[in-house]
Image (cartoon, rainbow, N blue to C red; front, side, top):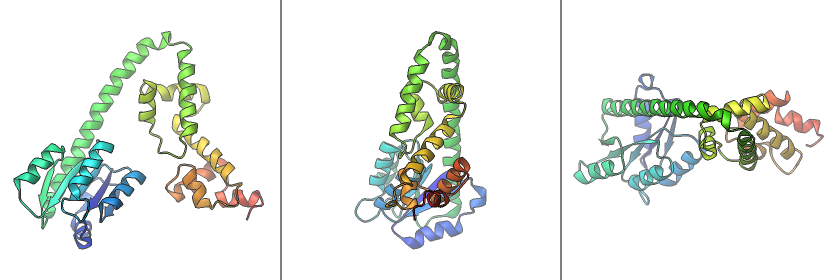
Length: 258
């Protein structure tokens, strides 16, 4: 679970990072941004589960940011920070389906309380999705025998989609939804046909693309990683070595490319 803190006051961000007892919470990564543009960039590069955002910032403010987040990442839980105890802010928070707003200067205990509420809501939503998936899987199991060759067409469509979108952040759940089946069912079909999980299939395809790109001496290894769908260079190197037995640079040297 990841958190993004957005505030144009750098000291305010640092105060939150330093004062919050993170050991009481369950966040894996804490990202920070001081503007609307920086926040949007982080959202596009990393999964963000909870947004803690100042309402009043220069240019595009917190309300603009939360409105954008709700349109593009509706599962993200949002909490406002504000210097004004104004009913208009409370009304806007409700309208944008935020958990609420916290007055500055912030009370650390109140921040922790809201973050725990966000964690709890995210867990509850995940549980609800699991129940829905269970129901879908039950129906799929009832009808699986009559699907016949339709599964082959479904797999071909999924494989084509993966090949066309290797540079993008491929969500197994979203892919399955596009195919009209559950992620579990699609994964089971992939395993049966390809002998590997769907995630491993995506990794193999990405590393295969990276091997082709590494033949181009005009591309840096970091550029190859990005073009192969990896924003994290270390994870790219680890995945590449797991598949090929060598790092990308070692592989390039084998090709006699400097």
